[in-house]
Amino acid sequence: MVPRTDFSRAVLASALGHLGEVEEAKRVWRELMEIKPDYTFNDHYARQPFANKDDVRRIADGLERAGLPH
Image (cartoon, rainbow, N blue to C red):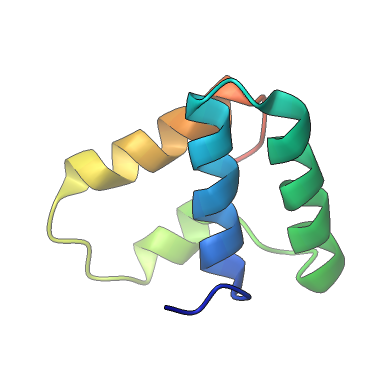
């Protein structure tokens, strides 16, 4: 829906991490950091009304698989 937001980039990096596309996930994360250097997924989701905490954990897991901070 909004492909150029910080959150969409974080979710894309997570998905790439789940797929084992670590270098591509890191590229997307670098792009995110260029746009919003102080972004953290933990801060972002803390401000959002996620209904299902398992969704949050899956996103964080993908970031971890790619070796990215969250």
